[in-house]
Length: 253
Image 1 (tube, rainbow, N blue to C red):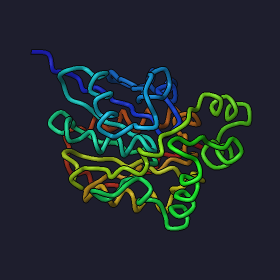
Image 2 (image 1 turned 180 degrees about the horizontal axis):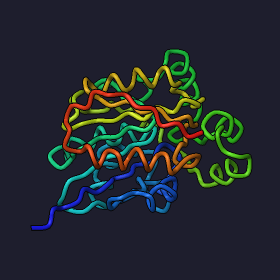
Image 3 (image 1 turned 180 degrees about the vertical axis):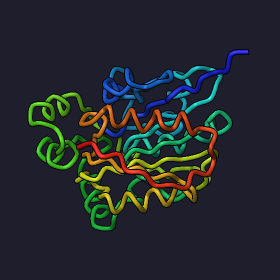
């Protein structure tokens, strides 16, 4: 009997879409599905009322109905992945978080931010209404800082508005991964989650989570897709190992 190969499920972060994985997917050694969450990319949806439950249904609708899964969440997509474990835990063989928030069970994405960033974000959201837009200048300096000016501008032009409700909603997960986990830390990240704070987020995933560092900005999949793909492919080889204990460094320079 032919062994069923695992499928990478690639979940984008806030304001983005499945397109952020375009340069990574051809380099993966197993099948992949890059999802557009509702109201992002080419998928319609009402951002003002977007919820984690709706995001999870969206993922379930786009993935194969059977077979093992490797869930990969970038940025806000990490919280989407964690909330989706309620439905997908029995099929998940590995969870990968790329520079994303890992709230404690029942806390929101905003709750996971450092204090100053948390206060500033709440103020901005209180003034923005049910959806909010990214600032070009701030985004290019903090999240796209590893990209050329031209590339950063092109990426920014593809961003959408984001749901304020989603970043405020409690993330319902058990606080324990159902399978092995990897946290990819971006050393040049200038966004809300500094490299040091990403260490704290990785710790929230629980014991035995493998740490990998990339010398890249928040959007590592755009800056160094080959390095991101290499980390994901390494996971396939060790997917059966439930308690990895080493910390690796994959330098994009």
